[in-house]
Length: 425
Image (cartoon, rainbow, N blue to C red; front, side, top):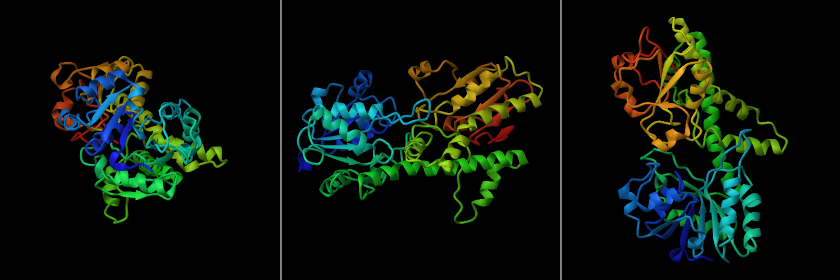
């Protein structure tokens, strides 16, 4: 059994989840941060985090206890491996476990007797023991629960949230044996000030994580569908929500775009497993369909408002404000603002995008016309869509928004931050 006090921890994957976790552990343990992207490693060695989850001061304070590397030889003396790689979906909305499998194979090359491998990536129940463990056994030649052990402790990172950071969010833990479950719980308890919840099994912990985001997805889908209904009725959805929220047990949510790497992706992991077992999860899939259609709905609403105001759509100029999947962070993973832009382009409109939160590398990934601050430009638009609720966008006045437009004003406000928009979701 591993002695936690003398353990050396390796974090596999240094993104939005892995880096804050590595930083937290490095305050008490020797840590090796492993990532396959050399550019990311070089930036972290200079105490620069492009995700903006950690600042230079935070990275500098643990630099003596953490090594950043993309070389397997530098992780072979670790005895606890924590996997925080992405679990995306493919073009058919099926789970893509490639990053998880490759990470397991990498660990298998250095896995030793009594080592522990803990997975944090969101998966469907069974992935750790049915997909990852066989990879570890095959590559290492070791026997599961005899020579090495596993745990699962799902991540609960909220990108861009400086209040609910990794140590302040209660952590679910689990292990492949009762003894390992206790050890994994003790490990996380040493850094998580919010406390831990030890699940009864790895599968229970996996299921708990995937339903967190599935529940939120379904709830938002209900609000989005209500917004579609109320729009047809000519009723302000937000006014309805404020009125309904006066009841103590009403869940107050807002309609909007559902993107990011979690809520818009994780439900497909659960539905995949359900359908594999012969069960059709109609409610979950229906929610996904509603939420995936919101970008198209917003684009079409914009076009209708422009036509109503006598604007010609083909070759019109439309400004889209914001591209990230949520406010005040540079995360563009699975952003649904893209759906708005692509739909408008199909109508023949010219699109400018103003996004102050992402860097030139991320901008280069998209074939869009990114512009500097439009409020400091003389260019005029046929309509403006405020797609993301960045604090910076809230600083501008109604007059400033209207001055961006020539002719009749068409301001579509997805996030309810413009004082008097033409239409808001």
